[in-house]
Structures are given as C-alpha cells and as structure tokens.
Image (tube, rainbow, N blue to C red; front, side, top):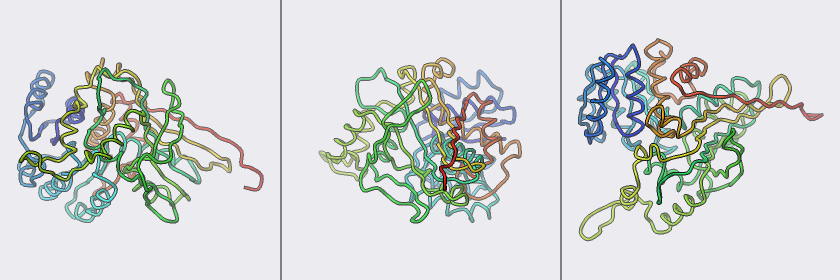
Length: 400
C-alpha cells in the first residue's frame, strides 16, 4: 500500500508515525507547502523503518500540484486546511486515488463534498469525509450505539476537556482557524420534521454534561459541526430518531475571547488593507497563537469525545454512550504528541488499515458512520486508542 499525506502539521505527523508501523505500507509521501517539518519527520521515521519515505512540496490549493504526487499512490489523507478539500478531491478523481479527510469547512461544504458521490463511484474510488476524532470517531461511535437499539430518539455528540495548559494566552488544542470559524458560526442541529437547521447565535443552549471520570461535569454549548449534518439522515431516521446535535465544552475565558474577536471583526477571513498590505484579520489572530503541535507536553488533563444515543431496546428505555478518553500527559509520554491531535490522527489510519485488509471496499463519497463500526473500533483499539461503552436501562412509563 502506498499512501500520501497532504498536510504535515501535528495531526499529519501523528498519522505518519502510525502508518509506518503497518506491514502493508511500502511507500509514504509527506507533502506540504512548507516542507521543513516534513523533512525533519521523514529523517526520524527513516531511522525506524525501511519503508520508502518521500517529501514533496505541494500547494493543496492547486489541483495540478497535488496530482503530481499521486501517480502511484493508493490512498491520500488530506489533513490540511478543509478549505482546500475540493482541489485535493479533484486531484484524487483525476488519478483514481482513494481520498480521506478529517474535516469540512462547514455543513454546506460537507454536503457539496458528499454530492461528489457519483463521480467517485464512476472512478471506482472511495472518499471518506470527516474521519478524525470529531467528526470521525464520534460518527462511528454513534453508529455503534444506534445499532444496539430498536428505536432511537436522539443522537448527541459531546466533546469535553478538563485540562490546563502551560501557556499564558489565547490558544487552541486543534487547528486555530477551524476553532475560531466553527465556534463563532451559527450552530447547526437536526430534527426529523425539518432536517438541518441553525440556531440564531453562537454559544447557544449551555448545559452541564457529565463526561467519564476523571473529567466529570463540564459546561457545553451547541457548536457548528459535521455530525449534525449527516447522522440523522444516514443512521437516525430509519430508527425513528427525532433530534441530533453537537455540543462542545468550552472554558469561559475561551468563550469570552472569541466573543471579543467577533465584536472587533477579527474573526473575518475577508482581506482588509493595513498600511498598504492586504491581510485577513483571522490570519493575523492565528499567527499570534501557538501551533497545536507545539503545545505537546504543556497540556495537563483529559480529553474525551463521545456519542450519547437515547432510545429503546426490548421495550425498555435505554441510553448507550460510546466514548474515547485520553490523558494529555500519558499520550505525550508515549508519543510526544498532545492528546487532541493524537486522537484526530489515529482514525484515518484505521480506515487505511481496513482498505488494505479488504474490509472497506465500497466506492463513492461517504460520512464515517457508513463504515462498519465493529472492525473499525477493534483496529482503533489495536492502535492504542481505547474506547468505552456505558449503558443505562430503565422501564418504560405506563402507557408509553
């Protein structure tokens, strides 16, 4: 199996380090517009493996630039900016290369990506949209939970982290561009009668949610996310699901900082002229923030992502919560990465495992929940990313 990774930031580095452990891997291409980190990583990996490792400079905004590295590549992992997904997808179509990414630029863009389904099928290739931790693991966790129930009422994705960071300033544990964009967007949710809808303002519907110990209770808010775009239609509606949403636990300081950025217009990606130079305000903010990969070893606490599915089984009310949890310090000790990017970089590698084993032979463009969850979760655990299942059952009220 020959694999290319486009985007060799923190998550791309995690995926690369996992891929080289695979017996099926014969070639790995590390591609980025800035090749210095990729060169450094390649030098480290070559000391650990006999797999052919190449470093290529690629501009993901340019279809021909991406296409130039794909002549003999079986699978491409796009772990760069989601805004470049379509250019990378086009390159994969032209070369008939399987495509996996970890996020979209928003619900409307995810729908457009999935609308390429017929094109990918005609080319005989698979495209998986949003296979990181959330989206990604969260979708597959939801599928596993839905499969355990006879009827489904609601699918609730919850992301929480109780950690502190050795950094005195505004930072994000994952892509700062994505964090600012999705947290300040109008949150999406899904209902069976109206489909996907949007709340009028960000940081809506604050609620306390109990994450697995030692995290416990955290304040969560509705945030724009990919899961609410697909889960209701793909796996929920057939079992009677009425509601799907995503909520993210956000620290008050993080929320207040984002509100200030929005108030000042510093979250905008529209270029403005400053002293004769055109800049996007959000790019200026992001440039002042540390890269998530540079926070490794500085974050202390736990990160958890899970899917809570409520419904019925054998004529009893039942809740199934499927989750993953990781300790930032433990992950850093074992891998030298921080937990958030590590949790994001493992799932796409598991999909490559399944393709290599012949367990994922479908073609077209799919969201992660259409992957068989049991073999996926088994291989995820084998890669060191454990998951847990909590089930609660109660009798139905009389007359229901």
